[in-house]
Image (cartoon, rainbow over all chains, first blue to last red; front, side, top):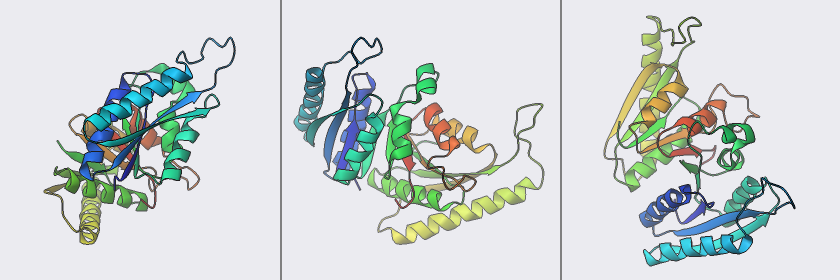
Length: 137
Length: 144
Protein backbone atom coordinates (compact mmCIF):
# COMPACT_ATOMS: atom_id res chain seq x y z
CA UNK A 1 0.00 0.00 0.00
CA UNK A 2 2.81 2.43 0.84
CA UNK A 3 5.90 0.99 -0.82
CA UNK A 4 6.53 4.22 -2.68
CA UNK A 5 5.31 7.51 -1.28
CA UNK A 6 5.64 10.82 -3.07
CA UNK A 7 5.99 13.76 -0.67
CA UNK A 8 5.51 16.94 -2.67
CA UNK A 9 6.93 19.88 -0.75
CA UNK A 10 7.50 23.58 -1.14
CA UNK A 11 9.40 26.07 1.02
CA UNK A 12 6.44 26.74 3.33
CA UNK A 13 6.11 25.50 6.94
CA UNK A 14 3.60 22.93 5.65
CA UNK A 15 6.50 20.92 4.24
CA UNK A 16 7.35 19.69 7.75
CA UNK A 17 3.86 18.25 8.20
CA UNK A 18 3.91 16.68 4.73
CA UNK A 19 7.22 14.98 5.49
CA UNK A 20 6.00 13.82 8.91
CA UNK A 21 2.91 12.26 7.33
CA UNK A 22 5.01 10.60 4.61
CA UNK A 23 7.42 9.27 7.22
CA UNK A 24 4.57 7.79 9.22
CA UNK A 25 3.21 6.03 6.13
CA UNK A 26 6.64 4.74 5.14
CA UNK A 27 7.08 3.16 8.57
CA UNK A 28 3.89 1.16 8.14
CA UNK A 29 5.32 -1.01 5.39
CA UNK A 30 9.01 -0.10 5.22
CA UNK A 31 8.31 2.05 2.21
CA UNK A 32 10.44 4.63 0.48
CA UNK A 33 9.70 8.35 0.45
CA UNK A 34 10.39 10.30 -2.73
CA UNK A 35 10.72 13.93 -1.73
CA UNK A 36 9.74 16.05 -4.70
CA UNK A 37 9.82 19.76 -5.29
CA UNK A 38 8.71 21.26 -8.56
CA UNK A 39 10.79 24.30 -9.28
CA UNK A 40 8.98 26.56 -11.65
CA UNK A 41 10.91 28.50 -14.24
CA UNK A 42 10.93 32.18 -13.48
CA UNK A 43 9.89 34.89 -15.83
CA UNK A 44 12.15 37.90 -15.90
CA UNK A 45 10.84 40.83 -13.89
CA UNK A 46 7.80 38.91 -12.73
CA UNK A 47 7.09 40.12 -9.19
CA UNK A 48 5.09 36.96 -8.44
CA UNK A 49 7.97 34.66 -9.37
CA UNK A 50 9.11 32.25 -6.69
CA UNK A 51 11.96 33.63 -4.67
CA UNK A 52 13.76 30.35 -4.15
CA UNK A 53 16.60 29.58 -6.54
CA UNK A 54 16.88 26.16 -8.15
CA UNK A 55 20.00 25.46 -6.06
CA UNK A 56 18.10 26.28 -2.87
CA UNK A 57 15.36 23.91 -3.96
CA UNK A 58 17.92 21.14 -4.54
CA UNK A 59 19.30 21.78 -1.07
CA UNK A 60 15.83 21.78 0.48
CA UNK A 61 14.81 18.37 -0.86
CA UNK A 62 18.25 16.92 -0.17
CA UNK A 63 18.05 18.02 3.48
CA UNK A 64 14.52 16.63 3.78
CA UNK A 65 15.58 13.26 2.37
CA UNK A 66 18.64 13.19 4.63
CA UNK A 67 16.49 13.89 7.66
CA UNK A 68 14.23 10.98 6.76
CA UNK A 69 17.22 8.69 6.19
CA UNK A 70 18.61 9.64 9.58
CA UNK A 71 15.26 8.72 11.09
CA UNK A 72 15.59 5.29 9.49
CA UNK A 73 13.29 5.74 6.51
CA UNK A 74 14.54 5.16 2.98
CA UNK A 75 14.26 8.41 1.07
CA UNK A 76 15.43 10.10 -2.09
CA UNK A 77 15.23 13.67 -3.32
CA UNK A 78 14.19 15.10 -6.64
CA UNK A 79 13.73 18.57 -8.08
CA UNK A 80 11.66 18.73 -11.23
CA UNK A 81 12.03 21.88 -13.29
CA UNK A 82 8.90 22.98 -15.00
CA UNK A 83 6.95 25.83 -16.48
CA UNK A 84 5.11 28.08 -14.10
CA UNK A 85 1.71 26.76 -12.99
CA UNK A 86 2.46 23.26 -14.19
CA UNK A 87 3.54 21.85 -10.84
CA UNK A 88 0.45 19.71 -10.32
CA UNK A 89 0.88 17.95 -13.64
CA UNK A 90 4.52 17.28 -12.83
CA UNK A 91 3.66 15.82 -9.42
CA UNK A 92 0.95 13.49 -10.70
CA UNK A 93 3.13 12.44 -13.65
CA UNK A 94 6.02 11.67 -11.31
CA UNK A 95 3.78 9.58 -9.06
CA UNK A 96 2.44 7.71 -12.07
CA UNK A 97 5.93 6.93 -13.36
CA UNK A 98 6.96 5.62 -9.95
CA UNK A 99 3.65 3.85 -9.51
CA UNK A 100 3.53 5.41 -6.06
CA UNK A 101 0.87 4.18 -3.64
CA UNK A 102 0.03 7.63 -2.41
CA UNK A 103 0.87 11.31 -2.89
CA UNK A 104 1.22 13.51 0.19
CA UNK A 105 0.88 17.25 -0.38
CA UNK A 106 0.32 20.33 1.73
CA UNK A 107 -2.49 22.78 1.27
CA UNK A 108 -3.09 26.27 2.52
CA UNK A 109 -5.33 26.71 5.50
CA UNK A 110 -8.93 27.71 5.02
CA UNK A 111 -9.60 31.36 4.45
CA UNK A 112 -6.57 31.78 2.25
CA UNK A 113 -7.96 33.85 -0.56
CA UNK A 114 -5.02 33.21 -2.88
CA UNK A 115 -5.87 29.53 -3.00
CA UNK A 116 -9.42 30.31 -3.99
CA UNK A 117 -8.46 32.67 -6.78
CA UNK A 118 -5.43 30.95 -8.23
CA UNK A 119 -6.45 27.41 -7.39
CA UNK A 120 -3.88 25.71 -5.20
CA UNK A 121 -1.44 23.11 -6.46
CA UNK A 122 -2.92 20.63 -3.97
CA UNK A 123 -6.36 21.00 -5.51
CA UNK A 124 -4.97 20.52 -8.99
CA UNK A 125 -3.10 17.42 -7.86
CA UNK A 126 -6.32 16.00 -6.43
CA UNK A 127 -8.01 16.65 -9.77
CA UNK A 128 -5.28 15.07 -11.87
CA UNK A 129 -4.18 12.16 -9.71
CA UNK A 130 -5.09 8.57 -10.51
CA UNK A 131 -4.11 7.41 -7.02
CA UNK A 132 -4.97 8.43 -3.46
CA UNK A 133 -3.81 11.89 -2.40
CA UNK A 134 -3.36 12.92 1.23
CA UNK A 135 -3.83 16.64 1.69
CA UNK A 136 -2.23 17.99 4.85
CA UNK A 137 -2.83 21.57 5.93
CA UNK B 1 -15.05 10.59 16.42
CA UNK B 2 -11.33 10.04 16.89
CA UNK B 3 -9.51 7.80 14.42
CA UNK B 4 -10.32 7.63 10.74
CA UNK B 5 -13.60 8.87 9.31
CA UNK B 6 -14.65 7.77 5.83
CA UNK B 7 -17.56 9.23 3.91
CA UNK B 8 -19.86 6.78 2.16
CA UNK B 9 -22.59 7.80 -0.28
CA UNK B 10 -23.37 4.51 -2.00
CA UNK B 11 -21.22 5.23 -5.06
CA UNK B 12 -18.64 2.83 -6.45
CA UNK B 13 -15.97 5.43 -5.80
CA UNK B 14 -16.98 5.64 -2.14
CA UNK B 15 -16.53 1.88 -1.90
CA UNK B 16 -12.88 2.34 -2.91
CA UNK B 17 -12.60 5.00 -0.24
CA UNK B 18 -14.06 2.61 2.37
CA UNK B 19 -11.59 -0.05 1.31
CA UNK B 20 -8.64 2.33 1.55
CA UNK B 21 -9.83 3.55 4.95
CA UNK B 22 -10.32 0.02 6.30
CA UNK B 23 -6.86 -1.05 5.14
CA UNK B 24 -5.34 2.07 6.66
CA UNK B 25 -7.23 1.59 9.93
CA UNK B 26 -5.79 -1.94 10.14
CA UNK B 27 -2.28 -0.64 9.35
CA UNK B 28 -2.27 2.03 12.03
CA UNK B 29 -4.46 0.15 14.55
CA UNK B 30 -7.07 2.83 14.86
CA UNK B 31 -10.87 2.79 14.97
CA UNK B 32 -12.84 3.62 11.85
CA UNK B 33 -16.10 5.50 11.52
CA UNK B 34 -18.12 5.19 8.33
CA UNK B 35 -20.14 8.36 7.98
CA UNK B 36 -23.12 8.24 5.66
CA UNK B 37 -25.32 11.26 5.17
CA UNK B 38 -28.88 11.23 3.95
CA UNK B 39 -28.56 14.44 1.99
CA UNK B 40 -31.54 16.78 2.17
CA UNK B 41 -32.36 20.15 0.71
CA UNK B 42 -31.40 23.39 2.38
CA UNK B 43 -34.18 25.48 3.76
CA UNK B 44 -33.83 28.72 1.77
CA UNK B 45 -34.95 30.84 4.73
CA UNK B 46 -32.85 29.37 7.50
CA UNK B 47 -29.92 27.92 5.56
CA UNK B 48 -30.34 24.77 7.63
CA UNK B 49 -31.01 21.29 6.23
CA UNK B 50 -34.76 20.66 6.05
CA UNK B 51 -35.47 17.16 7.29
CA UNK B 52 -38.88 15.48 7.42
CA UNK B 53 -40.12 12.39 9.22
CA UNK B 54 -39.66 10.33 6.03
CA UNK B 55 -35.96 11.06 6.24
CA UNK B 56 -35.67 8.58 9.10
CA UNK B 57 -36.49 5.82 6.59
CA UNK B 58 -33.94 7.14 4.10
CA UNK B 59 -31.36 7.38 6.84
CA UNK B 60 -31.98 3.75 7.75
CA UNK B 61 -31.46 2.78 4.12
CA UNK B 62 -28.18 4.69 4.09
CA UNK B 63 -27.12 2.92 7.29
CA UNK B 64 -27.91 -0.51 5.81
CA UNK B 65 -25.99 0.35 2.64
CA UNK B 66 -22.98 1.37 4.73
CA UNK B 67 -23.21 -1.81 6.82
CA UNK B 68 -23.39 -3.82 3.63
CA UNK B 69 -20.32 -2.21 2.11
CA UNK B 70 -18.30 -2.64 5.32
CA UNK B 71 -19.18 -6.36 5.34
CA UNK B 72 -18.41 -6.69 1.62
CA UNK B 73 -15.06 -4.92 1.79
CA UNK B 74 -14.23 -6.64 5.09
CA UNK B 75 -14.61 -10.04 3.42
CA UNK B 76 -11.83 -9.16 0.98
CA UNK B 77 -9.39 -8.07 3.67
CA UNK B 78 -7.10 -10.40 5.56
CA UNK B 79 -7.34 -8.40 8.76
CA UNK B 80 -10.20 -6.33 10.13
CA UNK B 81 -10.00 -2.91 11.78
CA UNK B 82 -10.16 -2.92 15.57
CA UNK B 83 -13.53 -1.19 15.58
CA UNK B 84 -15.87 -0.01 12.86
CA UNK B 85 -18.71 2.35 13.75
CA UNK B 86 -21.40 3.28 11.29
CA UNK B 87 -22.83 6.72 11.70
CA UNK B 88 -25.88 7.60 9.61
CA UNK B 89 -27.20 11.13 9.77
CA UNK B 90 -29.55 13.42 7.91
CA UNK B 91 -28.11 16.71 6.75
CA UNK B 92 -25.69 18.19 4.25
CA UNK B 93 -22.86 15.82 3.38
CA UNK B 94 -20.18 18.48 2.93
CA UNK B 95 -21.02 20.21 6.19
CA UNK B 96 -21.17 16.94 8.13
CA UNK B 97 -17.82 15.78 6.79
CA UNK B 98 -16.18 19.09 7.66
CA UNK B 99 -17.67 18.90 11.17
CA UNK B 100 -16.48 15.30 11.55
CA UNK B 101 -12.96 16.35 10.53
CA UNK B 102 -12.70 18.51 13.65
CA UNK B 103 -12.43 15.41 15.82
CA UNK B 104 -10.90 12.96 13.37
CA UNK B 105 -7.26 12.08 12.78
CA UNK B 106 -7.93 11.58 9.10
CA UNK B 107 -10.85 11.99 6.74
CA UNK B 108 -11.15 9.72 3.70
CA UNK B 109 -13.46 10.48 0.79
CA UNK B 110 -13.98 9.30 -2.76
CA UNK B 111 -13.15 11.82 -5.46
CA UNK B 112 -16.63 11.69 -6.95
CA UNK B 113 -20.06 10.91 -5.60
CA UNK B 114 -23.22 9.41 -7.04
CA UNK B 115 -24.67 12.73 -8.09
CA UNK B 116 -21.72 14.02 -10.05
CA UNK B 117 -21.31 14.21 -13.80
CA UNK B 118 -19.11 11.42 -15.13
CA UNK B 119 -16.82 14.01 -16.73
CA UNK B 120 -16.18 15.64 -13.38
CA UNK B 121 -13.06 14.09 -11.91
CA UNK B 122 -13.35 15.59 -8.47
CA UNK B 123 -16.67 16.66 -7.05
CA UNK B 124 -17.24 20.15 -5.81
CA UNK B 125 -17.96 18.62 -2.41
CA UNK B 126 -14.60 16.81 -2.30
CA UNK B 127 -12.82 20.05 -3.18
CA UNK B 128 -14.76 21.93 -0.53
CA UNK B 129 -14.13 19.32 2.15
CA UNK B 130 -10.42 19.29 1.30
CA UNK B 131 -10.27 23.04 1.67
CA UNK B 132 -12.17 23.34 4.93
CA UNK B 133 -11.33 20.14 6.80
CA UNK B 134 -9.42 20.40 10.09
CA UNK B 135 -7.48 17.15 9.62
CA UNK B 136 -5.57 15.52 6.76
CA UNK B 137 -7.91 14.51 3.93
CA UNK B 138 -7.36 11.53 1.67
CA UNK B 139 -9.06 11.68 -1.70
CA UNK B 140 -9.39 8.24 -3.25
CA UNK B 141 -9.98 8.09 -7.01
CA UNK B 142 -11.92 5.28 -8.73
CA UNK B 143 -10.23 1.88 -9.14
CA UNK B 144 -8.10 2.31 -6.04
